[in-house]
Image (cartoon, rainbow, N blue to C red; front, top):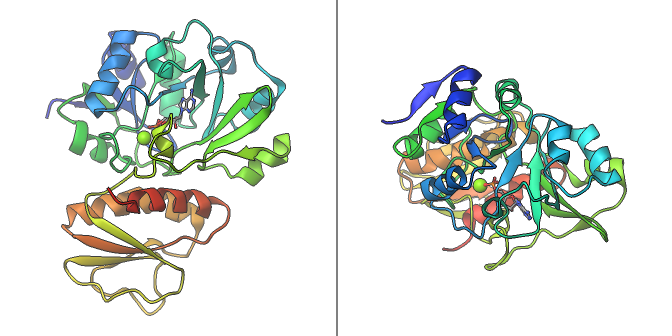
Length: 318
Ligand code: AMP
Ligand code: MG
């Protein structure tokens, strides 16, 4: 194993300042970070993840001032949303300033920016003089990592270090909202719900596309996928009997107890608990050697919509 496990933000800051790759903890998932203003360092992220260059990266910042320096201007909506949700799981897409390298934005004229809610990473960001470009720290297309172990298991040979900040509290990626002259557009469902955003800025349009050829893989039909096959079933419908080839994953722990090869996303049927565990459960299905899994949809409201978005893409045919 090549990657070091770090616990101090200063150690991570030294490596990042030298142009190296360090996985960082956030409240959503672990990110694979590099100096977001250094083309060469950013190119190494794409290489380590085998990520196509058409998939833009999110810049992580430690202050709103820093965010402003990365975009052309700072509309009222950005001010309101950043005040309401930063630090937190909301990414704002805005017209980019010249400081942002084209490799970060995949040649788009816009850039995605967010301030993560994690003490160690905020400390790190405030030690640095540059933003961190950081997509999820997993091979492209696979399940996102929510612990330092997940990162080491898959990228341990291709990165310098992981800053271990414990398991991610939220567990699914940020909500992405794009601003343009016509208004605000929801590009990716995530940890902050559309209702929460609309409570701050009024109605926004949904542009969460499901397609094979889009500008951004959070929008690809198939993504976040374990190697085992997945079939989704409606809440309360009966699932096939599980066996050592075929697991069943319920949304909530069954009151009568779980059968062998039966799993659940949440002990008490809570959406936030299910979000925090969904990627670990998907990973474990592979680790434990199942060829197939039947997974129950989450309740279809609030955070359940973002969980179902990930399940749907994980289940999409390759
Ligand atoms: P990840 O950090 O792996 O969750 O991926 C970042 C995602 O953010 C991309 O796949 C896009 O969906 C989105 N994104 C980042 N920058 C932009 C942008 N400028 N325009 C639209 N979407 C973006
Ligand atoms: Mg990702």
